[in-house]
Length: 264
Image 1 (tube, rainbow, N blue to C red):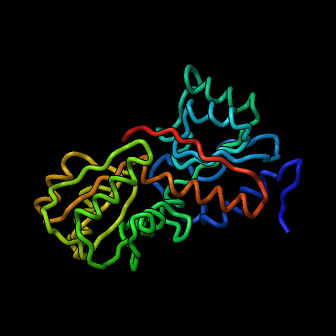
Image 2 (image 1 turned 135 degrees about the vertical axis):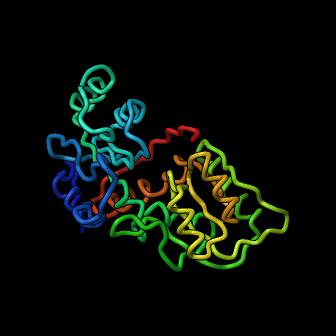
């Protein structure tokens, strides 16, 4: 039995379920990254639109799809308080005029063991996690594992994955015949001095991320770690898809994914 109906599902029921599945109340996140329901509608959900990013483009695609709940990984608010004028006003007006609610899930979705970006990227690349990686406060955001694979083959898998989502993969130097024996994944902006040092301390030889600053390539070479940059956008398409499919099955609500690649 589902909780759905032709007239829609109560927004409160959907968001309460999401909050519980993602453990929204206890998972820490970066400053100004607000998780959970960011904007309500009049109370009924008839269709879900999943997107990596909240933007004017994805709002327009949501309207075109006839959806009235946006589930996004990168939400409405990242830089603190803002004036609602210009583009922010236009976005807010479009949401309210079309009765669209917005739900955001950042680190709670990255870290989820079944619906999360990191676990799902491992599966997409043919890898099996056996541990946690990328510590942040009280949580681990990413995953790690072992098992021999030719590093050029692993890079090729990442490249094909990235290209399927409008991007491409890059890497630090990979030698012919190089073998990955211990790997870690941290999607999105996962390359940092902290993640590289954690990788070195835990014996990781290959780190797979979305993107990272230029200096991470230098630091990786110094530490003897190969970094595969598979694209911030591409590596974070998986979680919102899985979360929306989960909701669709539970509440009998149709859903769609809004492809809006940034190329990064």
